[in-house]
Length: 310
Image (cartoon, rainbow, N blue to C red; front, side, top):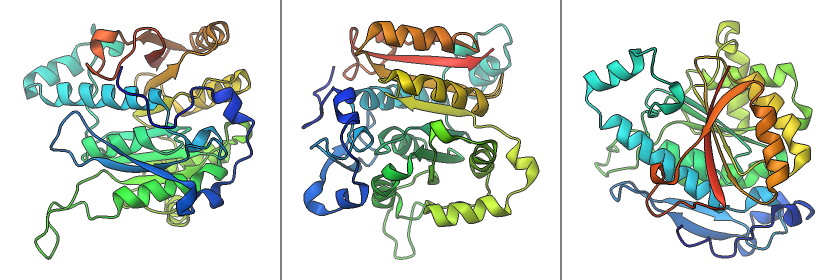
């Protein structure tokens, strides 16, 4: 696998015990930054701020499982978009084709990420798939300041290729950040997020503008579901399993939503219990090492799964 992130710590359980200080972490001396480079060298790298001290909690650290998932998703998107129009149509219309085996083209897709943290996966999708309809990044309120900071850093340019001055700019899909605590999720909160995912507003906005879009959305929009759900390295603690499974169940629609889950193994027995419960409502398979990015992959400690609702 590729080089581990400088200052990263694989012990999420240990960092989970640390008190979070999200506002303080926005101070320059509290943060480190890194450039996330893409498989396609023509794509502008992301600049991501993160905490290397562990004092901000697990949500403000960049984990290797996020790197691995981001690289894999870019690979399958590239492979899908490189197919001819006829091949893509045949794949999409072939009912005998297992949806878990289909390539993922993020074009015109609504993507919802749960437990976004620093936003590495969701922001990478917005960058390598600028024609995606919308990327919704969610996490607890305490993590939103650094998540929004990274959104603002990378998404503060127009979506058009050329500015009025003639200078080239970076194209990205619209990105929003929203609070979501799986332990306190309500039907109204689910409706708000699903509504926002189909908002016609096109901006990389703060939570206040997101709230305005939610308030003006129609009831019909609220009944729709995201095309893709992303979960990266979020099953490290058993107490998160039931809330996460409940959220996945509520946010997914059979025959529509594809779920991608990446994880770094830390407690095999605990993780096996999670996937046993996931299997009661979802079909899933593991992504084989040969399917992953040639550099960013691991055969023994980082895994990716793709799932669809039964």
